[in-house]
Length: 188
Image (cartoon, rainbow, N blue to C red; front, side, top):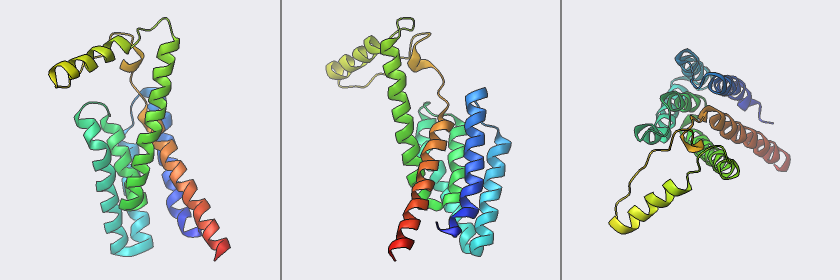
């Protein structure tokens, strides 16, 4: 294992899993937690790399912010999730913030597909299929996309704790980096 990854991975794990627990319990991520993550991420990078490290942390913050911002602007991602991804970026730097963001989106998509599958199996909640069919028909007939909001009680209308996806996606990336650095060290 690369010992240089430890000062970054331990606080980022604490941040993302704390945020995931808050999001699961309260469906929100406290600003204080995110701000603490940003400050610690910048301090770690400043300590490890000086001014260049601080610039790397700021660039990571920007990338983390940018990767989830479009979802926030269209109303599919919460502001806390965007801020959390930005805080994660301060630890990972711009390249790995982008990878962590993409991994988090992929995990979120898989969880969303699981929710969709549960909707098909559940007879109590309204299924989204007729709504999706109407949106697709409208697209083909008019050539314009239209969004129809979920019915009350529909599984796709429920709030989704996306911090869990960020935690799983980011953890997977960091663990993969540990594994990769150990393989390079063994083969070198």
